[in-house]
Image (cartoon, rainbow, N blue to C red; front, side):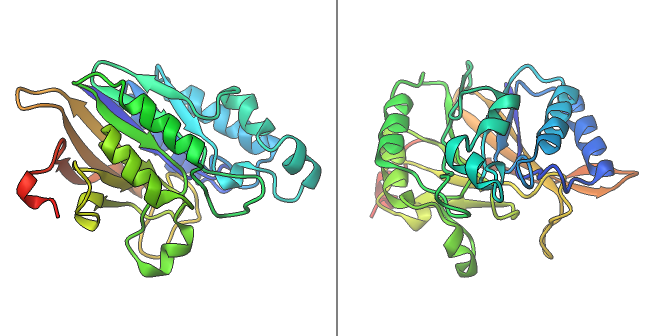
Length: 276
């Protein structure tokens, strides 16, 4: 069994100290093999914000962190830095690899940098990224649940959020499903959700899920969603790989994070009769 904690959009610089403390306590208690940081680690890509993020990651005391940048991790007002060294601050904490990978007995996770210095908010999945990820997915071991990590989501649950969907998402979904992807993890809109992409796209040959996380510790919560993180429980079984998504939401300083829901995902090829 492999456990993965997805933390998205902490926006250090706007963090709530009690929520940060509660999240550190939760992660230490869960002791996951992997923490996924799916972007917007900082609010304005300032050095002190990245320093706070570095302290937070150290306090989690996990063996591996897979982090990708979000649009807020690129300097907005420092035009020179944005054009010449857009990810300098992010690299100072997480290293030079902006599209990291993780491979374990039960899980393969592939990071995709959907941010662009020439796009302030919108994201993009290029043809090169799409094909690179598809090629790596095809090399996954049979028992691995295959995760793709993006910042801007590939789908949203509300029409009002369509502007936040990553450019190139449709072709990416098609290619990654064909290559064996199981779950696409995203963030960006501070709204947790699980969407079965195979129901929206009946032509997809296998189950493929879009799983989004809310903002983990920021005060920039939505009116209908507070601070939350996702926990993925991944493991093999006689009937094949399994993945359960648990959403943990912050209640208060006394309770901390509490499990709000638990959903086991159907994985693998779809029933032939259900395909268009």
